Image (cartoon, rainbow, N blue to C red):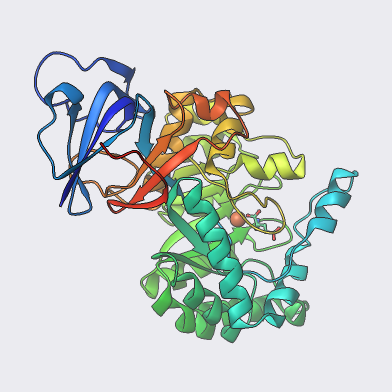
Length: 407
Ligand code: NIG
Ligand code: FE
């Protein structure tokens, strides 16, 4: 069964592939690396869950069925490469206190650990599924999901197993904070994480992460966790340089991590290390929005040649948004990214942060993960902040949210 998606006002492909044949389409965006490449007056064919063809609508081959986009924009589904969706409870009172002037210090993580340990499997599963479907409705077709609020062998194993029910991009974050029962023995906790906890979690996980920050884990501890994870077959990612300057980015780059996430406080050496490596700088501006911390300097990273991704960090503490459109709007307004850079970072950038070649773009052979906007161009995601612009979402070629007029 093939589907023609046609009358697309702007098709963001993020693909260097030439359009089909000579002549128009008009390039609506230049599409240099790091910027969304777009075609005007375009069409796309889905076959067997994959993108089979893109090009000018006037030259589209026949298909079994067709959808008329009415001149609206189509983009790759968003790739949210950083989220913490397995947790119990909520922390609205902490948020309200923060907005009344109390600083964010990540200490609230322990209150979510208490609530998560107390929750039943079904409570955690219901919360996780609600958030995952909230994401899908807002155009996120690939999401990464971390453990990290259990912090016992059993509770972490349960967290990664639940996360694996909703995504293949599961991250073991036993090294989130030292739990209270190990308060006077952080080394003993790192041994637990690298030993029995990792052994219990690795079968359900693809990634290992560590929160490398003052008050969480130091450089040696984080590096030990990543090395143990690598031994167990897990690839690395790091929570780095969120609350202050520190070694997180260097630890990430030295470990060959796919991504260093947050990157809010960077020294020149950190920027150079990211630019000179395959480690993506994943920026999470919803966190700075929700904690009133200074925003990361995206322009400095882009100017140095680093690859930048955008993600939500959806979690009950530092940022409880599931909305990639909001993150794009913040990146444009507050990080001074162009609309094309922000959309690229939220799609192709996220895919690079997850080392995925099949998502984040709409070149031939890509997974047919598409977002139809109720707007003529990707720029509206920032131009109309807070407006629900996602009209329809396809995942693997299936319409999974919204509605489209058939022709
Ligand atoms: O990415 N930085 C550490 N972990 C989360 C915060 C989690 C929380 O506050 O519960 C983060 O911001
Ligand atoms: Fe996080």
